[in-house]
Image (cartoon, rainbow, N blue to C red):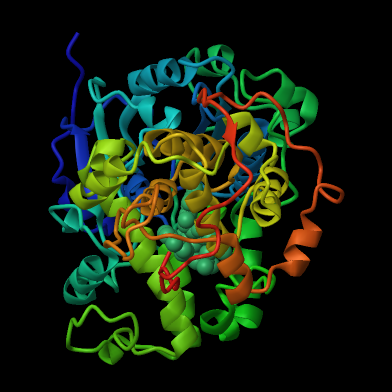
Length: 535
Ligand SMILES: Cc1cc2nc3c(=O)[nH]c(=O)nc-3n(C[C@H](O)[C@H](O)[C@H](O)COP(=O)(O)OP(=O)(O)OC[C@H]3O[C@@H](n4cnc5c(N)ncnc54)[C@H](O)[C@@H]3O)c2cc1C
């Protein structure tokens, strides 16, 4: 039976910028729908969210209740207790935050792959329309959205300061992307989502989800939301990658951001490459799960800096400094948060092959192919890499930090990747090992910037560097010895030595590498590249 719809001009609902809206199923809202659904999959927050603004806008227009359904799916190759606990902590946080809001919050955790898709179908049966998040990587949660749904489905892009669809191609370098930003970002900078989207909003209330939903797809229990080990143990995810001490969720994200702004930003430009200085924001996992928005970060930084749009430089020179019209540390931070972070989103938006070796630039593929059969001084299996059993103390320390804490400092992350390239039988195998280890252990893994960082190791966004070397060809080279000369790492190595760190887990997905060793590292000590590698 055909459902009744209401004809509404969708253009101004929730006043979000038109470029951030992608209509997946283009239908009019259903008149007999019970509620407006916000199917939350990526922007896991209820402040500074274009998707939530849009959903509230529709609920007001249609005079219907709003249901915010935050879903945590399983079935991804790297789903683990670590990532699940972090997201669950965020869900717990949202449940508290929304307790008195004029919306029903429904946290749903999939117990078997495929349940979210069925729940999505059931939601579509009852909803006037569905608003969901746009994200350029197809996580299991994103894949639960069915574009053939019988109701209107809208995807909203709240990923960064620049709308994903403002560019029409993938940029090959950070410099080219920065120039583009400097020309085009001005018109988007003041388009911000609402900091307090429920302020002065009155909506009809929904006390529970209608129909068979609560029975067939019950909301996550308090035990699960608390991330209790026994509750996690019942889920079909990797239980050997254990939770870390960092707490997930918008509240923890804000606390981290406030501390960074007050105490560390001032020395960011000077110290951000020093692994022992603890001078970076640590926001990557929170940005990855959408617990904090790039817009909020930008606006509070701008406030602290006394910034106004009139301070933007007229000329788009592509230079890292001087365009924003802010202090040196603030500009250095924005170059990471905006240029580098959004460059990765730009690539994944325009290139479906973002995770394929073939997506490397032609010069990098050519030089790596030429040296693919060069003899390697050491080769290790994925398991040996995972359990930090290489000959190199600095590399092992970085891997142990990844396994025990879920992150590696950016500078050492570069070294970590370069050595994997050097110590695997070929560049394709190196890529497989990096993706496996990064995405399995890093809290910020499976992000567009996981692929930016990993592919940068192999030449993406970079240029050829001389002299041509074995294995690397003209791809930029790094060595532990040179790193130890450039940045302080002695204390870092001590902190993450085998004696002080927990043993990494066994059983990482094997990429089946043969093992071969020689006693001598022929090129261990010869970094000629100016490694302010920008990454
Ligand atoms: C081999 C390799 C793998 C990487 N894997 C990931 C990953 O899985 N997820 C991820 O988010 N980043 C990844 N990066 C990029 C970078 O290491 C992290 O974003 C950064 O270390 C996060 O720390 P922070 O939040 O303290 O950063 P800050 O220095 O405080 O920077 C603020 C924010 O800017 C963004 N940012 C900073 N540096 C970079 C960068 N080089 N590229 C892109 N965005 C950046 C991040 O969102 C970060 O949170 C990888 C880099 C390499 C070399």
